[in-house]
Image 1 (cartoon, one colour):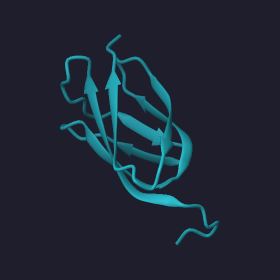
Image 2 (cartoon, one colour; image 1 turned 180 degrees about the vertical axis):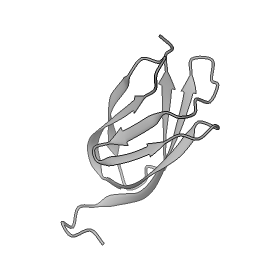
Image 3 (cartoon, helix red, strand yellow; image 1 turned 45 degrees about the horizontal axis):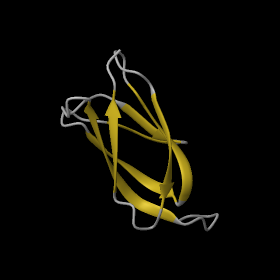
Amino acid sequence: MNPENIETVDSIHVSVTDESNNPVGQVDVAIGDITSTTGNAGGCTLRNVPVGTVTITATKEGYENYTQEVNITSETETLEIILEEI
């Protein structure tokens, strides 16, 4: 239950790939306090994400840190992140 009555999306699948479209595992993905780590297939799920403009980050050693503002709506189901190797 959401005590502050802020609209949230139950779950959003995040897909992380490199510039060659290969999945990147063990990437730490976060929107505020909501965090997850990608598996070997480059995917993870963020739960109870607030609707509105949020900042998503993705970090992994050997890659540029990723930070992007995204607009989450009640219809948002997936987010795609492309990491650049250092």
